[in-house]
Amino acid sequence: MLRLEDLGAKPGEDCAPAFRKAFSLQPKGGTIVCGPGEFYVDCPIEPPSNTVIAGAGGEATIFNGRGVADNIFVLTAKYRIQLRDIYVTQARSNGVAAFRHRAPEYPQHINSPHHSIARVISRFNGAAGFFISDGYAIHFEQSFAGDNASSGFHMPGFHTSLKFELCGASNNNDGFYFENAVYCSFDTCHTDDNRLYGYNVRNAQAIGFRSCGGERNKLGMFLFQSNPLHGNRQLTGIKVQECFGIENGGPSSFIEAHAVDGFSADITVQDCVDDSSPSGCSIYTNAAAVTIRRTGGKFAGTIPS
Image: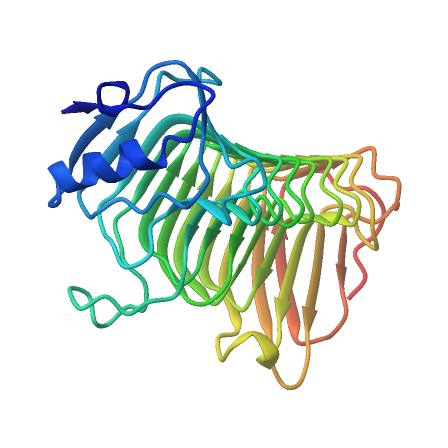
């Protein structure tokens, strides 16, 4: 285990050289800890595979890109990286990013897998709080994205087995945006005061939302779209269970679902509650190709189809 301060990192100075030294000492991975303080990041930090980067928790350990670094932590072409107990802010683009890349260790997937992001806060970035393209087996736990210029969690490309637990997104464009995803779950997550939707889902299969909430999202809590522009997967096996929405706006406050150009959507809504909806309509669909099975719960207004 290495301590970043022992390698020259000091609060109020660029810590990227200390990280590079740590990676050279542990080229095959290892644990790097960093104590409290605000550390500047003037160029992206790209840890090797099997690396753990741990801070002091909450907002104690801050990595500040100062609008200079495009991204603060970049996980592209690596696997089994853990980020935990850190605060990242003011990247020119994304706080944490993994871009499209076909890793030789996992040729069947375009991006590198098995990252774990726990208790990480990403705020005030020029694009997304977390940007993951083509992710595989990535676990987000108790992490938060707020006040970012783009989505809080922005997931373009193709994804398999992403898990979000106790995560939140506030004051972004979309709270969570992802497309072409299969076998993903959201458990006890929240989205509040986002400029578009709380959860924006496009062309996904076998996706579950359980005990999630959304409040005051401007265009609505959930948007589900089935559209060939976003890939060849149609919306099937989507389940929204025991979720709660309040004071969301848009054409429908809780769920808005669209299917176009021969695509279809199949969504199950179970034991959900939508309350105090300014739009007067909880669930809206634009086409007969959208099937919504609803059992239990409480909804405002009617459900057009």
